[in-house]
Length: 454
Image (cartoon, rainbow, N blue to C red; front, side, top):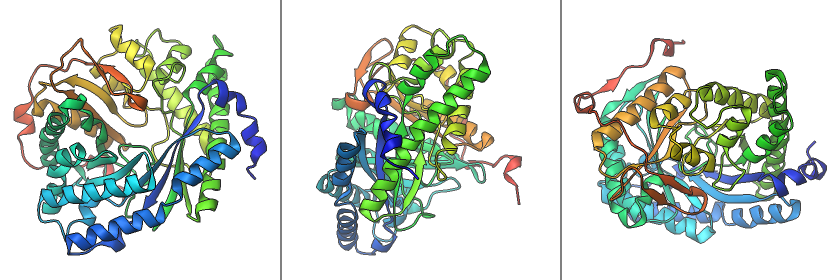
């Protein structure tokens, strides 16, 4: 039984170590909104979101106030719009209209973000899904709250290289259309391999077709808590190190479980999963890179970093699954550059490069996240980086993702300011050698041999 006494034990974590519930995300199925008439579809979408989520923000604020637990974001995820709009949307412009409807609904209920302007094309694109992908630049440039994602690969199906080739162009176009905001639109676009149906974190959240009509998913985060716990066992053995991380992850996860169950009860919506990811913020002391430093590497990126990150990721999951029966989503350690002050310092010190970040993604939760690159980077290079990361996810049967931000008008050595949780980032160099001949091949990379498990 989870009660207020368990939450009370974490007061120090909350007040001094940046522990928070990063998000309460309500997943909403839009399958019953489908219509062949675009106007009717938009009405159906707006009506359902504003009806189901009308008390979401209020309930989140009430729980935070009553329990003294910071709940940073209240969000919505919806069924991938590539499916929902297929009957009504005959062009990319039609999908942009749906994006604007989603934005209006998000604004009406007061959430921070709405995810699900998405397409799942791991084996191939329908014409409707291609239209949605082509709509992404304008959709993100003309909305405030909408987030987009595209799943282009999976361990069971392989990688859709046609979609990856297109997305290199889409990322650049999104950057150009939001150049007046330091290409911020790209921060709301994620490319996935093996995307989970129940991820509560933005920008990649969508409500999978395997989910029920509505569900509450909660993401909890506490890098600062883990770092402080490790300070007390500095120099101890790996056994002590691992036990400390597990115990801390257990306590953090119990806080999230309490909030999830309360939100579910008050909203009358089933509890789905708890995502126990260590999601950093730009705040000092709330950094995954600082945890790696405490484990023993001088900077994130130094030799030993990947091993330290693998240890951290595994122990967080081992501790978390003992605290909740429904752990899901991404769950592990995030390494977004712009959102993690320690990662930023590692880049500025010359310890962390794009290639090392790619290696680290083999053992952590997601992938190349919130990385600012020169605005003149070629589309084929962006596609090549995406393809590399998707291959890691496909072969290792794990979720990987890419959120690159080519900042128009800026180059290596400059810094971009996004503000808020998105932080700031130094522009990182990319490999200058080309991959055009590889990216221009048509078709898909087949699934690895270990995908045949029947």
